[in-house]
Amino acid sequence: MKLNGNSLDEVLKKEALSDEDIVFLLGLTEPEDCKKLQEAAYKKTTELMGNKVYYRGLIEVSNVCTVDCRYCGIRKDNHGVHRYTLSKEEILEAAMFAAENGYGSICLQAGERNDPKFVSFISDCLREIHRKTVSESLPNSLGITLSLGDQTKEVYEEWAEASGNRQNLRYLARFESSNQELFDFLHNVLHKKSKQLEHRLQCLQWLKECGYQVGTGVMIGIPGQKLEDLCSDIRLYQKLEADMIGMGPYLMSEGGDLKSLGQTENKKLFQLSLNMIAVTRLVMGNINIAAATAMQVLDPQGRETAISYGANVVMPNLTPLQYREGYQLYDKKPGLKDDPETFGLKLEERIQSKGREVGWNLSGSSRKWLNRTGNSQEGYDGKKGAGEQFVVWIKSSES
Ligand code: SF4
Image (cartoon, rainbow, N blue to C red; front, top):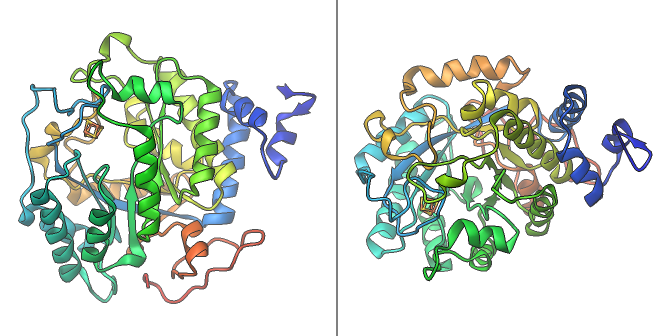
């Protein structure tokens, strides 16, 4: 396959990809072409990020949400969902499990709420998690990723302070699509504007100012989305200087109000999602990229395959088993019955099958963020990237 006389090999060797190159790579479908893209992304990941895959133990704190994103199974107007909020004790128990089992970091995720009671509940949990998880193997306590939606800058600052661990602090807020029309289509029901792209971008800016490692991402395969839109999404990642990316395929939800539109055929959607991960790695370089659980819906090997295409973060679910049915943003969510006691180890075998190893007891900060802020992290095993500051090894656990 060729683009303007350049072979795929030549495009993959370029230092900087043009928009045209990106669209070309995203659209690859022939197995041998996709394999070349995969190998280039995997190689770049090894060079810039090392050989480790980091665990973020996912704790789905609450499925109560005040927003009505149209694709989402737990949106406010879906009255068929039994709502829950974990107690502080349940959250702490899951966090302690992560700390004691070498996970290095956790992710607290919930539907969006802005009320003072919820804000202080999260602050409380963060303080306790910090207090209880400082140990010899985690001298700064568990790393924290928050995925709690749009908040004020003051709230972001309050949570950063409460975490007690600003050097391992992250926030994930996906903008879902940089195309204003697609964004509005996904989020705004007639006469009921529930989310604004501009505001989400403002939140990402505030998070950066508060010192978080900033994560964002999009949906891949939204009805009406073009490859050019995905290219613009990657350009926006660059503009935002994102430290981490969490992307997933657009999957239908019975509880959403877009189900009549269906979704792209699985095999096609899977390859497009893999291509998007690989091209994001090639363009963005030394950031963290998550292998989304949603990839498992499309292919039983989805998560591991995403790792072979350049992802380096996975999120084993640590939500207590009895609540997991209640947290389904899309249908057929996998892992509802995965036992935390054994899952992390089983996953390790699957990660090793892709030539990677688990970064046990490491928080796995984004190297882009480390370079930008001058922070250092032990356990990093990547090589020095062109023109970048070298990150030193300190000891075998995170500093
Ligand atoms: S995607 Fe998040 S904010 Fe939107 S409805 Fe679902 S839980 Fe709420």
